[in-house]
Length: 155
Image 1: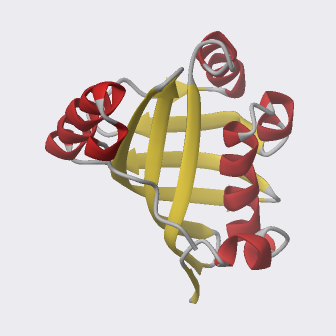
Image 2: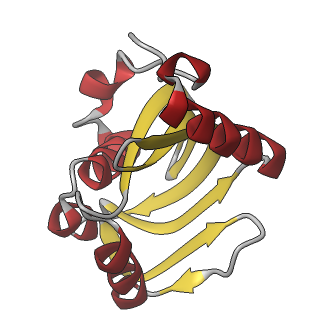
């Protein structure tokens, strides 16, 4: 098993096997590079967010991402606390940020991806709805006073 702690791992893992695929994929989504992200998923992708409907197939995932992820609509950011790889399985412990204009909600996410032949075939994210709710409330408070919102970790 290899591990890459914190966001400093981003540059090291960007070209290293399965973990590099996952890090590069999430950074592509962050950068609104939908085509780049789609290049890293398989045709039979299975994307599941805990307690939300599972998205089956690259084309359905593409429709979802293209309809939501745009600078004038929705953005995402990611901070990696840890990235661990065991064979084709990549585990991420991270802070995700979902943004809409000045609104930013930050919350903890645990991800598990399976990477085969350089493509993500399964992607499952788990999170705590209480943490998402708190992040959303702090994001709304941050619209009034930015100091009330959580900050993305640095470094």
